[in-house]
Structures are given as C-alpha cells and as structure tokens.
Image (tube, rainbow over all chains, first blue to last red; front, side, top):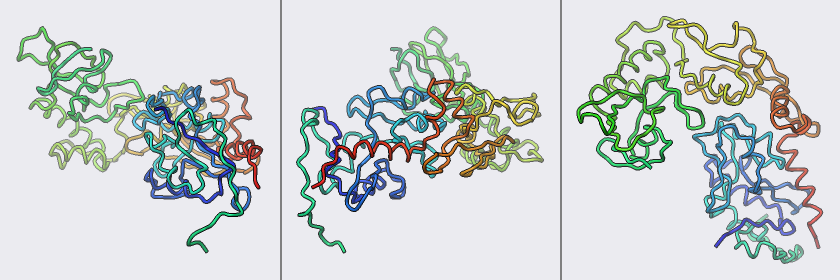
Length: 156
Length: 254
C-alpha cells in the first residue's frame, strides 16, 4: 500500500513533540534546533508544521550537481546520499519552501527522508496533525480540533 | 551484467561499474583517498591499487591497476590483498607520511599498514595537503574552476592563479568541506566570508537579517538556473515563514 505523509494544519497545537522526535531520531544530539520538521509558531497553541513536500519535480534534485538527492521509490521520499554530497548548499538556496537545511555540526545538508517509511514524528503527535496514511485517505478533510476541551496531562 | 571474481568471491555488477564498485559489492574494503562517489574517478592517490587479470590472460598473470577508474569486464579476476599490492600501498603511504608527517588521516592509514615512521626524510615544513585533488575537482564540477594544482614535483601545490585572490571563486566552501584533511582555511560569519585570500560579502535576508549565501554564489546560481537574483536573498527560515503564512489561511480555529 502506498503511504503518504499528511499534515492537517488546523489540528496543530505547536507542542513541538515532532521536532524533538525528529531531532532524536536523526542523531543530531537531540538538539531541537536541528530538526527537519519545523513548526512555525504564531500564537499560543497555534502552529503550522513545515516539512519537506517530497515534490514530484523537485528544485533540490534539479540543482544538485552530483545527483546526491535521489527518490526512494518505495517510500516516495527524496533522500540525501551522504557519500555523494559535496556540501555546496545549492539545494538549500534552491528549495522554494526552505525545507533543505544546513547542519553545521555534521557539515552536510539535512532533509526529511520519511525515516525510510516509518516517520518517527507521527506517533508523537498528540492531535493527529501529522499522520502517515494510505494514499487514498490523503484528501479526506481532517476532523476539526476542539481546542476548548484539550486536556494537558502532567503539564504545568 | 559482467560477473567477476574479487578475492575468490564471485560478484555481478553493472557494466559501467569500476573495479572499486565490484570490490565494495563483494564486501572487500579497498583504501581510497582521492575517490568520492559524487565526482569522476581520478586515480591520483594510487592507494586503491589492486591486482587484475583478464579472462583471456594466463592464470598467474596479473597487472597492477587503480581500482577506482578501471572498468569491469566479464570474467575478470581481482586480488586486493596480494603481497605486491600491500607493498605498493605501503610505499605510497610511506611517501605520503614523508610529506605530511603530522596529518592524522595519513598517520592512521600508515599505521594500518604497519608504518609508524616514514623511511624517507620527513618534510621539514609539514603540510596537511595530500594533493588528492578533491578540492580542484569539486570546483571544476560545480562549474567554477577557481583553483588548480600549480608547479610540478615536490613544488606542487593547490593554489588560485598567481597566488592572488581568485576572481572566479564564489565562496561556496565546497572545497573546504570536501577536503579529507581539513587543510583549506576559511573564515565565515554573518557578514563576511574569507577563503583563498578573497573576501566575500554575505547576502542577508531582508526580513530576518540572517546571512544566506555570498553575492558571487547567488550570481552563479542565478546564471545557471535563470532564476532572478532576489530569489537567493531569502533564507530558508524566511521561506518557511512565508509558506506557513500561506497555510494559515486554511487553518480554522474554533
């Protein structure tokens, strides 16, 4: 079954769990600043998760001089091949959405690779704003989130 | 798809593969210094030498070739650990150690082949550059060619033309990033970048003030892609913010 990464912007509460999960899953010492999914925060409990679209005709793939960005046909993700990347950062300049990221600690670019078909951020999302669903369900509009009844457990 | 034997193990690879690809497919490690998957093989460091015998050659007849740029052929026999191959690599590493007696990468490889100290006269002015040519090749590959190797023999070095700040350099730092011994010095900050003696001004995002890329880099990208220069003035954070604003319109909040 073809699966797809689905983002329901209206359900995001900007808790940042996906950012943390991503930062830990990719071994960048768990620094949330080095996540590949970024929440644009614009108010209390209001956020927009921004993550790579895995574009069909991707700008990053087109500008890469060494063909270091290749699509994994199984997951549909565009993956960065570390052994081919020359760190010229053309993809960072080329991505129209700002989803190619430069990692100063590892001296290479980072992008969402859908964790090889099991995105680690998805199970941590408490409201289902991000989901990994069969491709047929991608266009189903999300249930609206009733923000008044949200319960935070163990918080301050 | 040719089938060949690497150290007695049969392996089938693509017809455009090299002996190095075949060795890796067979799970055999061949040391390399100047090889990089994203760039054309060069055969400069001579560390990846292997013994190779073609199908129609006598069984005991082998030739020493560089694995990184030698094409594969049906029925080839490859030996990566024969006595003379080990000896050839030892000589290469011994010479490299004489040139760069203090470079950790060279010392590590030399130690792997049992060389603790070079048997030649060590370089009185230790240098970290192993002349692998990765920096010049990466510069050629992205279509800039700002640096090259100059002089010959022991005077050979990597330098910009006439040892002056290179007019073609775009300050992308690809050469410094790829250098296996990190011996290309550069300075970079939010305002300026300096490499090969050339100073660059960083383009800054008009909204957030973050440094994005150098002006020369943006000009180079704009020329290559046909996209206007202003496109490259936006930082990735700024682009994400713009995209989030587009999505906000979709967001229904009770």
